[in-house]
Structures are given as C-alpha cells and as structure tokens.
Length: 292
Image 1 (cartoon, rainbow, N blue to C red):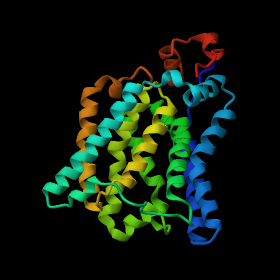
Image 2: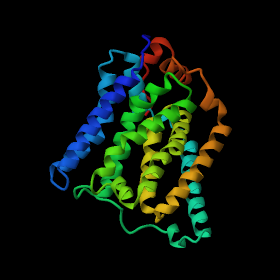
Image 3: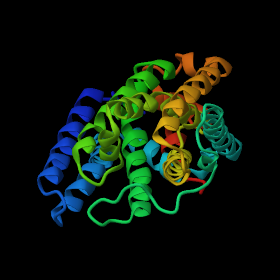
Image 4: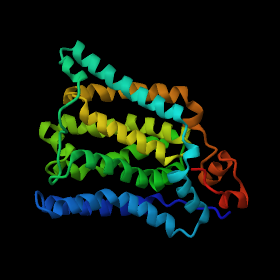
C-alpha cells in the first residue's frame, strides 16, 4: 500500500475560495434567479473539492476509503446513532427547560408550523437535506481527515469547528438565509452560532470515529440536528442557553471517551489504522468487496 499524505491547507484554501466566491456572487444577485445557482455552487464546493482531491490523488487506498465511508453500511453502529439522537434530544429539552424556569414560554416544547428561512423561493426542507448530505461529503470525505491525520481527535475538533464556523460567514449577509436572520436579531446571536459549532462538532467527531469514520452516520446526525433545530420552537435566547448546555455535554463526552479523543495511534497513518480497524491489511484491504 502506498502511504497518502493529506494536504489540509490546499484543500481548505480551495474550498474557501470557491464557496465564498460563489456566495458573494449570490449576494450580488440577491432575490434574482441566479442567486440559488450560486448558493448551491457554494454549498457544493467542499464536496466537489473533496471528491476531486481523492479521485486525482493517484492513491488507491484513499479512493477505497472514500467508497467505504459512503457505502460501507457495515461500519455503522446503530447504538451510537440512537445515543447521538438521545444526547441531542436531551440537550434541547434541558435548554428549553432552563429557559422556562427563567421565564421563557413552555410553547418552545412544540413544533413550528414552518421553517424560519427560504432562499430564492427554494423549499427550506430541500435546502436542509442538501446541506446535510453535501456538506458531509466534503467535510467527512476529506476535510476532517486532513486535520485528523496530524492531530488527536480532541485537537482536531477545535480546529475543524473553527474552520466550519468561518466557512458560514458570507451567509450572514445573504437575504433569506437562517444566518442572515440571526444577524438581523443582533451580534450576540451571530456569535452564539459561531461558538455553537464547537460542542456540536465534538459530538459529530465522537459519532464519526465510533462508527469507524462512516459518512452515513454523520449524514444522518447532521440531517437530524438541522431539521429539529428548525422545527422545534426555541427562541433565539434559548439557543444561547443551548450552546452552554451542549458545551457541558461535549465536556462530559470527552471525559467519558478520553481514549478516543486523545489517542495518537492514527496520527500520521489514518488510512492504515482504518484498515486495521476494519480487519483488512495489504492487498486484501485494496481488493475488499464492500458489505452493503
């Protein structure tokens, strides 16, 4: 097997240049038909860059790894998917409960009639679905591994959360987006969104590694949190409380999974370590027929 050297700087510079470039064009054409096209192109940029990087790498091990992450259902552990949903649900319930104790409305425990945003007339549910699937292909297809190859998963979670938060920045100025709605409410809500990516990414990293780097698992979780963050009738103030609650949950998750977050066995040999975890080595690992 030929060792592959991840190139995180090249990947993220390309992704930011493409995404921000397209989203700036979307801002220029706001409320006009081309806006949706540029929004979609910006969203696709991480996934397209990841797939292009892998397919042009000339490294068979990297290509096979991407395939297994996408269609390798054998990697998914349902227990951890259920646990991630329960963790998220408990965090949301606790946040609303604290809000109610502080004088907030109990109606936050209900579902909203509609979504809080619409981009160029595109259904919000479709936007949420596309964002969840396409983003995960980019971030888990190459982006997170490119950082994880050189760091513990604990440090990687901090680095990637910062990158992920900054990637969204142009959206705060594009009319119709969820992020633009936060900007209209005030700076504190913008800052809360940026900070909230940290605990959520710790949970996603935990789920990703526990499911042997399965993209199917993270797509499911990403879709779940995007949908319920929109449909649960939380106020913007409660979402600030939610960030603090999830910070506590993330800290507990790290303490309970110290080996996962601080293990160094994968550093410098992420793909080789994955083959070992899958029970595959050498030529066997490259000729393996997927279990789907």
